[in-house]
Each structure stands twice: as C-alpha cells, then as structure tokens.
Length: 477
Image 1 (tube, rainbow, N blue to C red):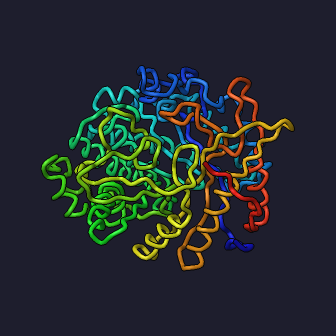
Image 2 (image 1 turned 45 degrees about the vertical axis):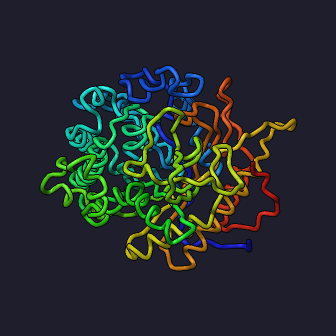
Image 3 (image 1 turned 180 degrees about the vertical axis):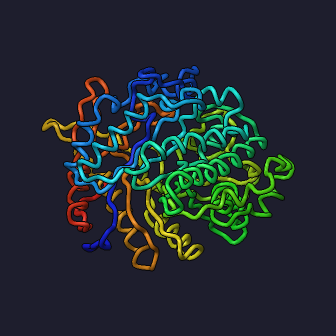
C-alpha cells in the first residue's frame, strides 16, 4: 500500500442503528418492535440479550456527538426507530420521539456533522407484524406515511434520506430462515416480503419528495453479496445466488423490473401475484446515491453433498442449526469455506471483493453515484493494562478496504463517501453483545466510552483525507 489521497469532497462518516444503540426501549411512548419481541424468544439471541439498554445512546446524545466531533466526522448515518415515532406503526406521531431525533440532528449540525437518516433498520413496530408485517402489502403504505412524518419534521436539516437498510436481511433472514426478527419461516411465500419492501422503498422515497420537493436527496442501502465460482460449470450456481441475493432488490429499484429467470426459478414457490400494476414504476425511484454495505465474500459450486453456509459466515448470517436456509430455490448449491484471514464473525477478509463490486455497479449504472454506507469488522477487543484498546486487526481491515475503495475510484467508479461500521460497540442482533464492531468501545457494565486505536487512526484519515501505509501485520484469526 502507498499513500493515497481521496477526492475533494469525499464524505467521511460512521454509522449506527437505532435498536443497536439507543436503549430506552420503553421510554417516552416508544412501542415494542419486532426485535423487542424476538429477543425474548428463548434461544433466538445468544444469552437472551435484548436491546433494552444497548449503548444507552438515547440518554447520551451530547456525549456521543462530542465524540463524533472529536473524530472529525463529516457525516453520521443513524436510523430512526419507527416505533418511537408511531408506537403501532400508524396514527399520530409521538412528540417525544420526534423531539429526540430533532435534538440529535441539531446536535450534529452544531458539531458541523451532516445528518444521514435511515428510515428503516429492521425495527418494525410489533403491531404491524401482528397484522402480517412485511408480508402484508399495507405495511408498505404505513411506511410511506411514517416517511412523510419524518420528512415534515426533519426535512430542512437532514442531508440524506435512506429508505431501507439491507432489505435482503429483513426479508430472507426475517421471513425465510427465521434467524432474525420476526423469526418466521414462510418459504417461498416470503417473496411477498421482498416485494413489499421494494414497494415500501418506492412509496417512502416519493413521500419524502412529496414533502420536500423532487430534488430531495434519497437513497437506499443494499448489502449486495459478492459471490465467486471457481469453474465455468459453477458460474450458473453463482448466477442463481446473485439473482436471489442481489437482483431481487437491485433490478426493480434501479431498472423497474424483476429478472425473468428469477421469476421462472421461483415459480414453484409463488406466482408473484402480489406484484400489481404500477408497482414496478413506483419502486424505480431516481437515487441521489446508491448505498453499498460490504463486509466479505462467498464462494459456491453446484454439488450433491449440499451444505448450508457455516453459521457466522456472511452467507448464513443469523442462521442457526435447525433453521431454514435463506437461499430460496438454491438447495443444490454448496457454499465453500473461504480462505482466511477471518474476523471474529468468521467472515473472510477480502478487500478485492469491494473493488470488484463497486466496479461492477459502475459499469452497469455509470451515471449512478455510490456510497459505502457500511464497512467494518468485529474482533475480540481487549483492554490493555494501559487502558487502551490496541485493535491492530481492525486498523488493518479498514486500511485494506479503504485502499480497495481507492482502487475503484481510480478505475472510474463515482464513490462519494465511506461510513465506517460502527461508531461504537453495540447490540449485534442475534449475537447479542458478543461481537464488537465499534471504533469506540462501550463497557456494557458502566456504559463508559473509550476510543480504540482504530478511532485514533480513523481520525487522522478523516483529518487529512489521506490513507497512509499501515506498517503493522494483521493478527487476524
């Protein structure tokens, strides 16, 4: 690696999600979400951990924004808890919930940090799930109503509106494999959740622009899977995975259609009658940026001795023994163990995958600006005797992936910024508090925040917009 200067105006940020950091789960009128319910199902989350307290961000906004200011962040990507605004997913907004996010946005602006608001990061109001959740078309319309409320409240102060975060996880982990909330295993019927999430994206984007005008900056964040095949014979398996992993969201959002091959491959599971006239036109909304979340890669082949991905790998994230596969129609595809090194999640470290993904998107949609909305790594951080957290592995991971972004920019990709996941340690969904992604350590007993070495390193990258060579050897597992 050599020294690399990023383009002028490149946005440096960090990201979090409401249920993972806020806590205050029953305060100020907030209603229960599907994660409040799911986390209390025996065995659903490691050690029965819940987000009731999380990192207690709800009570620590000034402190946390001060840390962001210390890091010099240009922008902060946070999510809004829908049940904090509308406890049942519909009806009047709760003033206390609106005021919380209004205070957060004002604190950010006072610190010269641009607020990037995600409207949905998986915490669906439980009352809507009781009516069918994302498998119920009506949920998409309720989501649009909620988006209009937030645009009206914060529209003059938010720099970017993101409709959905990783709808693949919401649909396939939530309604197919049951590994994430709401924990349902609906098989092919869960493709209705896919479509209604797509529809919700289009309706919400149009609702935001209905309030703020057609130039309002709207985005979506997709966790596009980078899957490889070793032989031409296995390329067909990879293509099928790509369709159910990526194209089922990317193509309708960007091109206004579902892949014909996907419809044929899933015709024994559903007749897709939930797609109504005009839906695809509604879904295909012009985007200010396309958000990309990237962590790792997968490798597949067609085989008879078929195995699900190992629990902990990105392809099986949220999957536990005995749960259904999230990969509909791919039962004859085998996932191969990737070569290391690995993070504490068991995910392989492959920065080249990020370069490849960004260039593929650029070649396919040359006029669409891109943004890395999540990238980071979990490691088993240890507090040293000097009180510091020497997370060299994380620094090596981040440096390698920022270099990968730089290579994509060199090759012509229009990448506008990078949001590190995550600002702080937090509730890592089905893993509870066992996995630490933050560049800021949270002591879950005292809730004290401590900058890790990676935070000090990232602060210098942000200050100079320059990536310097990392002269440490990663000690990745």
